[in-house]
Image (cartoon, rainbow, N blue to C red; front, side, top):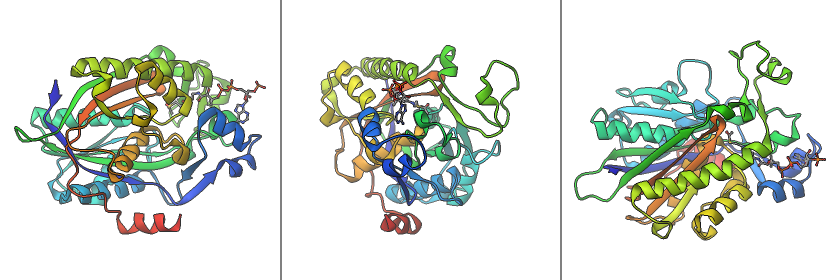
Length: 350
Ligand code: ACO
């Protein structure tokens, strides 16, 4: 079943500062060739000292509202997928809500690690379907650089910072557009395969000694996550298509979470989906957790890769281990994403 919900606007924000593989080779014992061969990543963006998940999320949300030609006072809900919030509370969504002037909107965060955007999209779409909201801004925003252990070469080469957003509105009867399948899963038995410590991390021995250092940081069993990711992405995508009554041949474009090119290639092989129909931007962004999908979606929309009526398959996996997949019938945004002045300025510098 597809919910009568349209994506009417898209937006994205990537910080100006670029960190290349060559830059990383000056920090840890690694090499450009190793990173490209094992992950497909060439460079990633890193937030400036004064940037946070809420400031970047607000930039992306403003761009999405401009693309939807929507006044922020018409927004009923701001829901943000993030695992790197500005603080423990209030929610990052609350700060975004204030920054964009959505003064009538409710606001809260969803933390499902890299599946955060799909989880937030599910909440937003179901709020509209249930009649509790008419217009929702769904944001994915992450400052992964603040929880990366910059001495650990097995993780620090993978992640980047940034934000992406979409505007959801009710589709009138007969109008194109829909958000369907809404498949979300998690396997808490593998919660320790990838996790980040934080201020509330217990001092019990369940977590490794490394995890108990003062700074919050990511701890990962890369190979376990890799294996789980391939299975989770392929199964979620295939089950979501079945739930939507579609086959892989109906998919115009797949916009997956961007973690590792080898994971995406394995998923595409397993689904029988040509890579030409898979959006890949991780070479320029690295893994931005819940931001990956909305940024890739906005780039695909701006590049004219999406047409009204297209079936777009979204699929994600991440810490939890959480995974999910959804099928969006593309309705076309009202206007191409128009970068806000600040975002345009920062992009011009790059
Ligand atoms: N540079 C150079 N060498 C490295 C690096 C590096 N950056 N990192 C690891 N190595 C070395 C290892 O030490 C190892 O050396 P050894 O053979 O002497 O012991 C060798 O390279 C091979 O290491 P592997 O771990 O086997 O490398 P692998 O091919 O598995 O690639 C990687 C590692 C890229 C991390 C891969 O396992 C992966 O992508 N896993 C999934 C990670 C992921 O997607 N995480 C995000 C989840 S989403 C979320 O929730 C945030």
